[in-house]
Length: 389
Image (tube, rainbow, N blue to C red; front, side, top):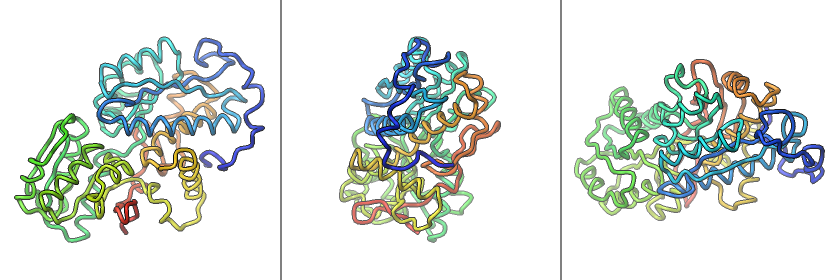
């Protein structure tokens, strides 16, 4: 399935009946008017750089969808964005406001797992679909209690499996582990420990740090003292970049491996010289320039990266998750022919398409549909991400 169409969109696509329709005050839940979708993102707080990338991607993708005719025969998508400040309480306020006052047909939440889990009961109560860009499995599991909640980003278990398999392939016998002390980090910690046991790799030491911490040099030194061959870091930016510097300052000369939350191009900027040679598990789209196959999905990924780079200059790996959230809603509205919450939910649950991040296949048993084959191991070479293998 095509993602968004060609990079260049005719100005004629901006005209038509949708342009003259008036908002009907229901956010698109009744016939006519724009179809409102809400986004509660981390536009301030410790992960604001990630939330900003999500916002840019959503705006670009919604503009593209509208330029190509919108949804339901010409109605435009209207994106309403609110800042959750990387705070669970604010995210609760935002989601309630988007549903009750802005009358959105669906909600997209950002990368803060701890912010998203508390709002799953809200969308369940109001029967409004939610698509999360965060990673924690608890966001969509158990599915029986998360009927209206879906997510795009890979599960921590998927990241850990790919990461530890690569370490085993390289003959690494021991690793240290440093993770953030929050639901995302704790789940990643458990997944790494489980996969390390499975791979026969010794974990020489484990350390944790707080989400608000600005320096992890003490933890880094303790890990290095245990002499691991590699260190696995489970952290988002800016923490991931700080840790890379801390490990360098501790004179660690082994491999540094990051999970998909590390921040993509944000890590390269934040870690500066310490980024060179660092590995990360992430959707391969971040290194799409290294992909030489000519399939339609690859062409669409390259088009997306080109459009994003053309508007914003630097490409963000996180952009792919937000882009796919918009595409998932577009396709669900088109397939169901409705903006009714229950009908959208039923459609999203069975939807499958080749997204910017990779193939996405939702099901009644799995509301986190990004497929494992979308992930690869990347490495920083000459200040940019490349496929490691």
